[in-house]
Image (cartoon, rainbow, N blue to C red; front, side, top):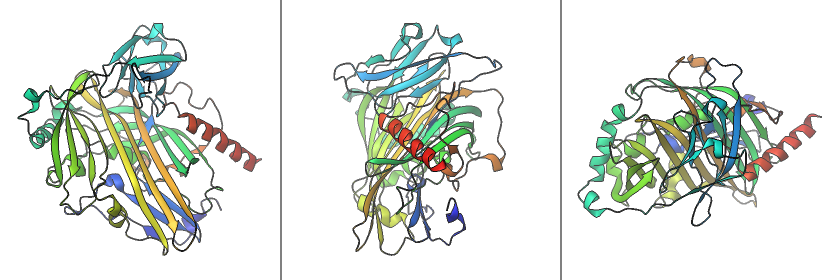
Length: 453
């Protein structure tokens, strides 16, 4: 029955295209494909993590691997999604949801430092030569949440946002670059992982000055593991894969969050000043107006104090209208099935390199409750995707052919092979899997092996 659904009659649960007065973002696009009597495909726009060491012309490049945990010095709590990078280079990664990191450093950079940064913390730099190969503990010091009334009292958040949008061409790369990224997407049914897929990506990142040119993403190397048998009632699959992560680059695609058309739908207020990526950033808090009869977003936008560069954004589906999210997203669905969105969280971070800002990390997590009416069947599905940019180069710029690039219609899990070689990633930088994901990969891979024997 593998891939049989591509040849079956199906109904699509399709998201309406965004209209000016229906300001639902592509962030929330979902597609349900009904496969035969009891199998479904549930797709959404994911985000991703991946990276490859820039090998330049050295085919014999040697790397050293370092791993550890980043935590709050006072509370000893792990600091999740921290940026980890080699100073003076464009090599980096992020910590996972346990605060753990793993980074592979070319030997020619061993005399440099690793930088560790996170919103609200002072950036820490550690000599690479002083690190152990594993079990390193990096402590970050929390910085006070500065209100600075004198500084921000007379600042209008909408004016700051409009100015930030106008300054995107000078704050972000004005020429195309090549990126290496690591991407991972997972599906959890209740408490159990049922699918994991990940890849290293080659990315043609278009100039931020040319607003009509789109990014192009190509899967360089990837793998997957699925427990399809366990999901014998509903089969969830992401549609769009890595492509949709780059759509969340709000500096390139302001969309429904910070575009001029979006400003009238939100209430904005200044939230203070925080440390972010070794700089100071204004915090602009926003939530949809209670008079807006549409499900929109709530979150925080971070703007560099010195030049109003967009440094990051963290947002969620606003609780004000979350009960109506499914109503606006779903055009068709199986008779007798209800699908409710319980929550949706999104994170987009940028990194400043030589005074120019670049996309660094994108993460999405959506939680859905699916049930059949008049039946006991009910499951909660958590879909997560994240992307980490691990290297950037200005050399060998290649705009991939359209037929080679990832598209929104792609189902990423169908484009990569099964988990096999434990040393699969070699010298490529990746996001260290969470402990639960590592366990899930091992279990899913064992099940796959048993089925093929």
